[in-house]
Image (cartoon, rainbow, N blue to C red; front, side):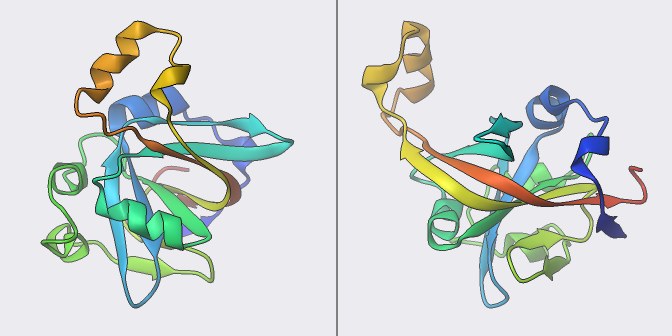
Length: 168
């Protein structure tokens, strides 16, 4: 069961959580939502706020939901979770990923998240921008964009942290 948790008490390593265990970026409402696996992102402090930064390619269906909503969630399921094999390879335009992953959506007044997650950040969008290739200072980064499908960047203020009693 997920319960409110003080973000300043977290002991998790964000590099491991995001880069190795991965996360789901989710957005939407009771009528419709979508989520996607992500292994690019960041957690930190910006403009005096605890924030999460996420990157979403224009081809991802989840982008439409994040753009439309004021809030999104980041859901962490721990190591070796099978959710990512579906949410990282299948489109929500073609299948119901929630059903395919046997996830239970939860809705607060701000964002959708999933009861099976071990850790959830509810984020209020405070900034968005399109990555511009002209600003790359390292030429090697271009190899991440062979198709020219530059990510859209979202920074969200983390307004709530929920943690499973399995992870506390």
